[in-house]
Image 1 (tube, helix red, strand yellow):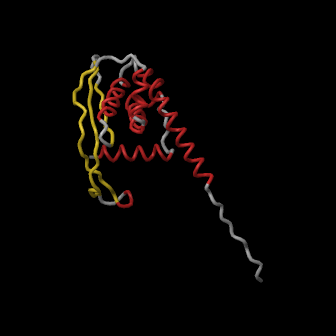
Image 2 (tube, helix red, strand yellow):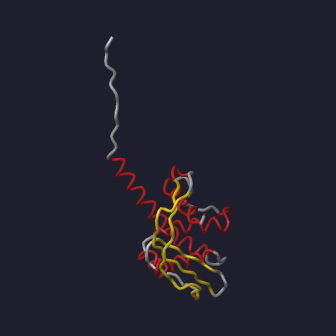
Image 3 (tube, helix red, strand yellow):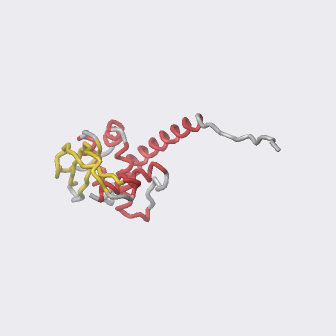
Length: 173
């Protein structure tokens, strides 16, 4: 289950700003998919549906009907200690195949089957040559910008409550 840890680790790196949010053209398909999944997993279902409804999407078939299940969440003490089972988390997953043959997978925390299917569809479309740019500009970029705006707003709110402490040196001899 190293994949689960990598996804959580990548998410933490993304949130802390240690990983670039925008995938470069040199990253290749794997890097673009990874970056897109990080953005799509945090998007609101209604917002994602609204953006996808505007597009002319190709036909696709469900390889795995959207379903809910449980995954074991593993933890490490201090980040590098021995792994232990922390508990279970509810996830929804789906898999779709486009008519051109690309297969997309979608996993999302919670019990949102529709969102898992939309993420799987976006994953498949990112792999196509003719539609990957459209998905990046019309779906991923608006969601990324909204996510970054929320992050900036939270940072500004936190900065407003910052307290600067200083120490006065007493003049004792």
